[in-house]
Image 1 (cartoon, rainbow, N blue to C red):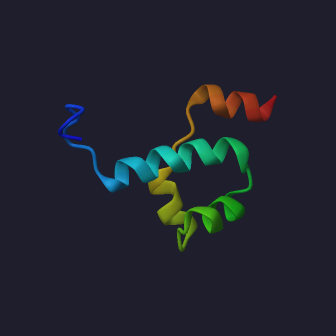
Image 2 (cartoon, rainbow, N blue to C red):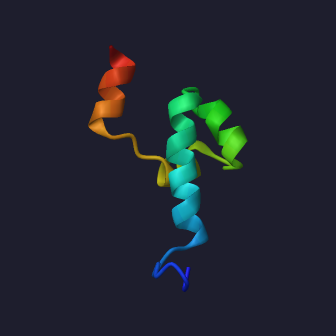
Length: 60
């Protein structure tokens, strides 16, 4: 990160990004929870936040 000039990047930032990307593939929240290793839907909800465009696509 120093070499690339990236500041303030943490493991949790990477986990949040990975969870959001995986949620586009695994739409079942229980399946996503098992894949990401979250122990409850509440903890999964801290890491995944669908944007309006994603929610609209799923409802279509």
